[in-house]
Length: 236
View 1 (cartoon, rainbow, N blue to C red):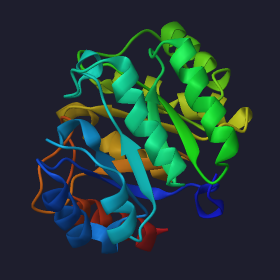
View 2: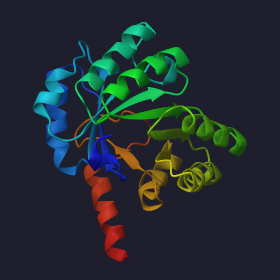
View 3: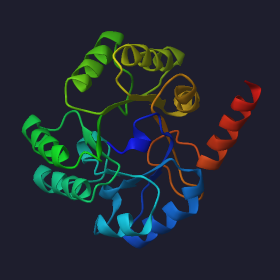
View 4: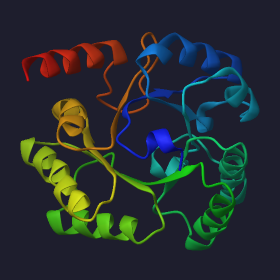
């Protein structure tokens, strides 16, 4: 994995454009705040990889989220994974693959990653309706640690403060196993976790680009997130 991303990355700005030109423009406008820029391939009318690699110097994360996990991609799984494989072949910083993806397809991606060690793999799991039990969350984390992932991502929807605490507490297990983890909650009740996670050992948090649309409920503009973090750091 890219050496600069072997340690916690901080802010990932998630960019969901309608076309490649628009997405590059959005990404560039917020690049000063970003440690990583996520390109949501599933929102693009004609997704490509090369233009982003050529025009953006910030480390890039490519995600092609299917409809069955809250995204917009509705094609075949083979074609969905092909775009991620193209990103790996361009030696991008990171790609995101859902834990629920068929194991044989994950295996194909892992084989390509072995040939491109500069790229890290995030194995992700999302719940847009609620937060599972503590036992279920622990099982998801265990599956991620055994999946071949370089980084795990567990994002749920918070219905109360206990959901937030249970998700953030996964970082204790992750840290004890030396496994980088992205863990926070979506929704209005989960907003606090988007900032708290990076003060509690989370690998990185996701923010919306200034002037751009959010890609998940409760996402906060990156300039606001940056100011909040600066105030917290100043108080240390």
